[in-house]
Length: 144
Image (cartoon, rainbow, N blue to C red; front, top):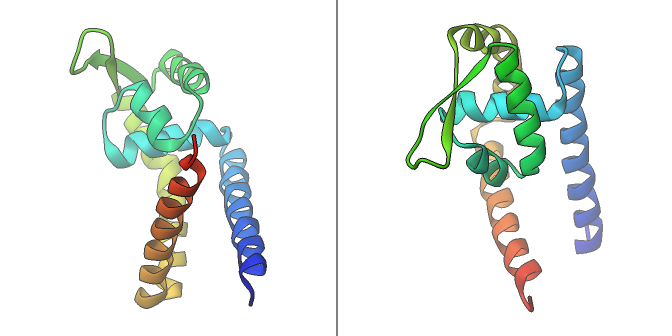
């Protein structure tokens, strides 16, 4: 397969994966961005809105809107962070139950998928994606 065809297939796969995560989120009564913010907090622990926005490539305003909504629902709370300006976001007890009840299924799907691929293909997927992302980032930022 030539390079242009590989890029086309890779791009289509990335779009399809995003679509599938969005489909899963919708089936569970949440938006893709809500799911990703819950995912980020559940996987990495308490974070600031800025850390979520930068780490998961979600617009800051979207993070703020989703976080405020989840706070109103009683799932998230703010606590003092590393500085006065930025507070860390963490789960309330109700939020932990919500995430355990909803996200467990997604984690199981991800785990079954990776297990079905086998260790060698998983390692290649992760290392290949990491390398592509790092080199692509350098190329995009070249000449800024």
